[in-house]
Image (cartoon, rainbow, N blue to C red; front, side):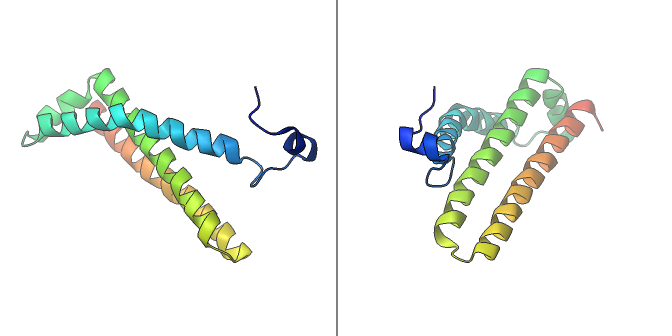
Length: 126
């Protein structure tokens, strides 16, 4: 099922060629981030003040590690989508806009990768 108008399907264009899917992806990640962030806050409060061995043992549980990774990926994706909208709306130079969007993608990917690798290293005892 496509959410595009008949005219946009014929011309192959939308406001940004994929505005509807971008809108729904941002809303979906926002909804997913509510329970995931609550889980992460609960986990952080529970593990606060514990030593590294206890925290590593907690993250060796695949459910905790998986939910933490899912939270990181969802938040990073949501961050990327939100910043992309800001860049597209407020950066008017085409070249600068392209560089900013590319930088946003790489920054979001870098943040998510570092966080996921950190959780995996902690869980596997690296």
